[in-house]
Length: 307
Image 1 (cartoon, rainbow, N blue to C red):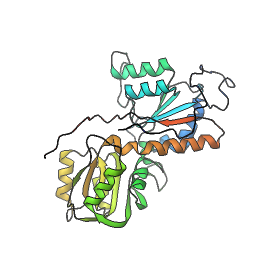
Image 2: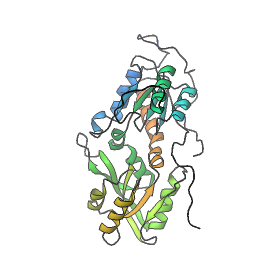
Image 3: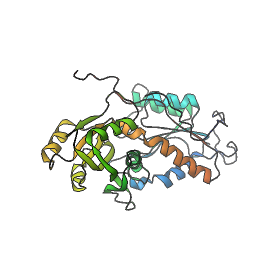
Image 4: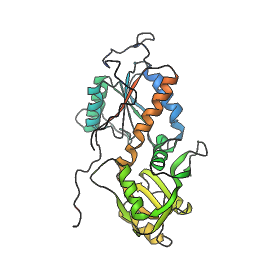
């Protein structure tokens, strides 16, 4: 993915190297504490919206530390962490968790251990906004639906602890019907460039209008997609057997399937999330620089195709 201008708050007005301020009043002028950032994030993406299996929230960092720079990224990879450290971010907010499964050691002899050590030693906090960021209004699938031009958008599944507009996945309608081939081209055009491209299952000339989307891996939602009467389902990480079974269960070939990069489908949310957090902080009188990571953390480098 080509580097992009991801600074959403204007010129750098802080050096990002201020020492830890453990007491109120020691932070740079206008700079909130990490605790203030946690409250702002909770306002936008409440932890109560996270799925029961998920691990979201603060992973590393001291709530009393001042924050002048925040970076958003999809994955807390070592490369992303290094990018945040070099830029001077005191807070890295990632969509994917670093520690989703239980661990018994964070020794620096493992990749996750090295990540934890680098974060702590550099004074960079790490915060995860995962399925709460998927479910919330303005979340991952909302941004994807908006980028595709969908109207009258509603959740595919309702959040257990949320508003009627909140939940995993979205379904809505295009303003005008188009062929599956043209729609797939629209999907390809809105996503950052990655090796895997876009895979499509269905009649290239078939007309589609009602569209279901789920940023990230969405093959657990096929029942909800069928119930929504969607003509096509856009999601990521479609495995052979769920995709094959969905084709077998399709009515008149629908829903067609559009399979995209997991990373690419969720990257779209980052600029919107950065802008939303910036607006909340500005309303509270805080002066924070926010940027989106330019690191392409999609795991694939190239692809071979017939012909």
